Length: 404
Image (cartoon, rainbow, N blue to C red; front, side, top):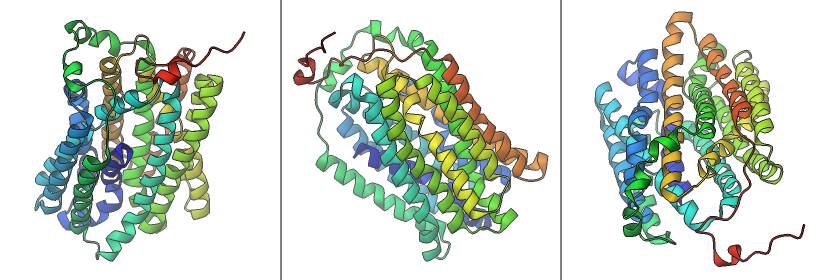
């Protein structure tokens, strides 16, 4: 349920590239304004991720997510109604802040239900569901838009209704396990004083760099690739939506295999270096051809590299001395880097279009940011030995140690 709720928000964030032609025609937006609109959902995360995560970690995930879903629905209604560009930006910025707040409850639920040694695979499974369903959402958006006569406002109204349904389902189905919220609020002031120490750990900073580059490249393409191939090669939104969906679905499926490989071998450094090279080759190649079969193949390669995302994200759960509060802070660092990449990618690409008189060179530059995964792989320490967390079940704690 948490993946479904988080996913619904990211579908709205990610499908902006498919809605931009209709929005731009309606409101008369320039390329720079399109980049601003795409990135606005993550402006707040660059500043508010850490304090918002610390605050949200004090409350019950069940009730927190219910409020978040209601707010997301309200801010989508504002965007759908917005008569001017300024109000559209306000609605998207507020929606991004609400969506940002959904991550701390998710991290707490993972810690409630799973042992630390399971976390890479848990995040890989979540990433697989995320990639497949997000890909389906991107694939379906052009057809929904076409069925509604290119009415982007009605499309957003439909998404707002979906959030209302999710809020009801969440309250009816979700259960918690472990510490009560009042116990979480009672954690010592000494925990709070260690925030800076957590945020400056070498592995967390290295993981943040990789997450920033990955999201910069991915969101630059999600925003401007449909416009680029429509203008340059006359490839329809239905096809470009399918090409983008290919990489997201592939990334989800690849994450399962990559997660299993890293869990069983511990070779996350070598895997990340290889994925960084693969991502860069895939994205740069997508800017150099108008052949749909070749674009699908290159999107498949870039998507396979996105399967490294759960490896990077899991670093925040595997730092020394992890506790629920510390993990929440580490996750907030991941959200800051995700937000920064998501903001910088579309903004940089949109404004560089005017410099290079086209989108090809800006998209190539954005695609090369995938090399940050190589840097992450080279800087990360060897994968730590994983042990059950304090919230593991009694049965897991009683598991016998294998004979030497």
